[in-house]
Length: 273
Image 1 (cartoon, rainbow, N blue to C red):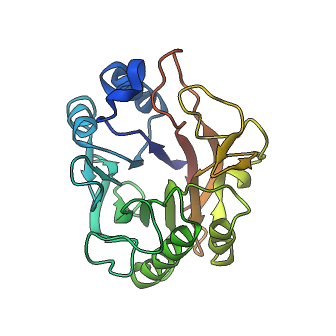
Image 2 (cartoon, helix red, strand yellow):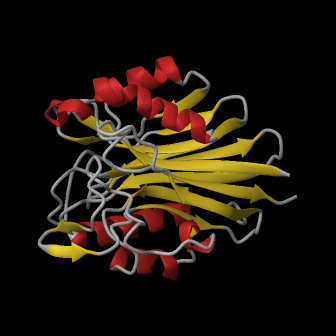
Image 3 (cartoon, one colour):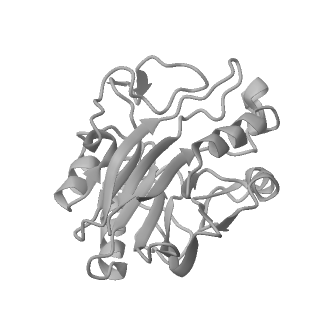
């Protein structure tokens, strides 16, 4: 049986020297070990910066990658990068766009705090010939309107690039919980939450953002977030070729050192013949 392991991981950019003991130079080895022990075939990174990329190019040479469009500020750009195992996949197509009213250029709209974007690749698995699209994004952390409108752009892009019966895997840091407008919009358009589809439940322990070990429910904009599971792997597959069999929040840590201020999420998908 062939499987496909997909990871989404907000790694927190390498420029954050204010993180002290969890600055990139301290947590990079644990970050890389966390990725290696999960053995992902495809990874969607959020907040990847130059220092992170230099580490991965050296420590994870088995992966090819697409950086995607620049986000963040002009001093320390960030990327929603996609990595995939070079030995297992061939790149068929790729694209990128910003989440704004002018998606073809670096810009922001809808009261977004930061410039946000999405990147995508279409890959063919060399051992099974299954093709799929993986799209990676990072929605705004302040403006719900920006999250909703950005999600609509993502859905419009998927409608343009998805050919019949090609599965779409949508990963990212959505900066909102399940049962919010963005989440409901994705479900209305046929996406399945692989975390819940594999017999997990949302409770006080399902948070993916932890702020370097703060595991209590978080506060965003003065509102209690009882779950704070904001990193998702969503699947839409009318062909039935990909079946989620397990999905977990990876809580690797060596306190006071953590791989990131987010936990990565990994799903294993069975590839049906």
